[in-house]
Amino acid sequence: MAVHPDAAETLALLDALQIPYRYYSHSRARTMADCAGIGADVGAQHFKNLFLSDRRRSVFVLLLLAPEKTFHTADISAQLGTARLSFCTAEELYAKLGLLPGAVTPMALARPNAKDVRVAVDRDILQMETVCVHPCTAEASLALPCAELLRFLAHCGNPLSYVVAG
Image 1 (spheres, helix red, strand yellow):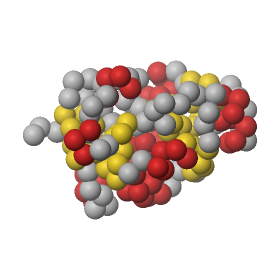
Image 2 (cartoon, rainbow, N blue to C red):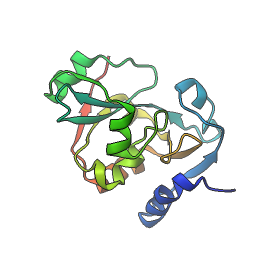
Image 3 (cartoon, rainbow, N blue to C red):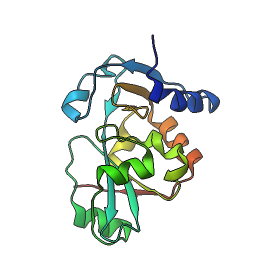
Image 4 (cartoon, rainbow, N blue to C red):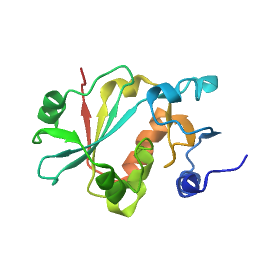
């Protein structure tokens, strides 16, 4: 199976960390609806990945949100102790994570410009045994154990918080 060129760096890092994954090549999947069924053969679930910032653009947050939940900025901002968060622009997403809209993923936290991005994980994601994430392209997905995703996040070293989303 051919690996998408934008995924190669992520896969190499996962291999180096000895993190097991299953690679899925597919047509562009930019929404939760597009991701439906990907990874179902191994019981994997996608979750929402939202790239956010405060008004001054001094705080950047990658929010990992359970798929059935809605982002309530007041709740999440209060839990993180930040000014009100809102969605970043496509330019900010590319500058910080090197990603295009629709390909937002925690796997981009390994990139050099992402070191100051805070990570907020909805506690409900911790109940998922196997998760699906994009490997820095919306044309592929990776299924991996949730515990291994958390190990990957620890390796990246970004500030990490757990939140309860509504």
